[in-house]
Amino acid sequence: MMAFFWGEHRIDYHLERASRKTLAITVKPDASVIVRAPENADAEAIGRVLRKRASWILRQQRYFDQFTPRTTPREYIGGETHLYLGRRYRLRLRTCDTPSVGFVGGYLCVHTPDPADAGQVKATLDAWYAQRATEVFAERLTYCRRIAAFRDLPAAETSIRFMSKRWGSCSSAKLLTINTDLVRAPRLCIDYVLVHELCHLIHQNHSQEFYQLLSVVMPDWEARKLRLERLLS
Image (cartoon, rainbow, N blue to C red):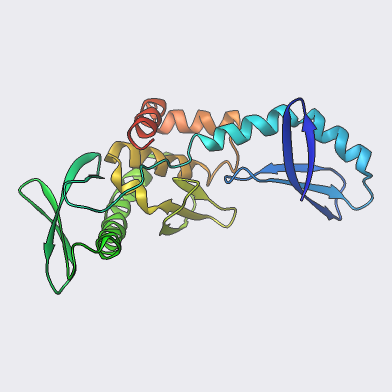
């Protein structure tokens, strides 16, 4: 790990040397910085480029920070409020040999062998959220691909898992990864994240072209993004 200072800011980065002619800087979704430099580039030349791009690096890090999920710590006790598809439900805990989750009378009922064991309640609820996320995201992804069909999006694999830093991501290998916790948000916010990542199948960056495409596919994406941030921050 290397670092340089720009004003009061310390910027850490990983330096990779390769057989290339130009220096490239990448800011990843977790805010880490990768610098790929020619094998013969000297430290002074690399430093000049980094200082020149410092403001851009910080902007990218702030941008990604907007998408960092911020959820309130949970105790997994009766009466505690949990979200599902944008609606708040209070937990009702019941004793049952077979763990399960369901809606009863407007409550989110969690059945476990020992309801007083917060670990059991959390594990049961997490498994339920994961199952629901798989079903809901598949449905919404079909819809989102349909509204973006005019761009003939390439095929992509989809992975659903818990992520601490992102609601979603799209790799250069065309793998869409969606945060399980997103199932807590309303469908319109889920659609925003999915469309955002689908647009990355065309533009693997946050360039002007990327935002133009995002705005064409989903003209109200900014309002959806704001609602997601307010609800799950």
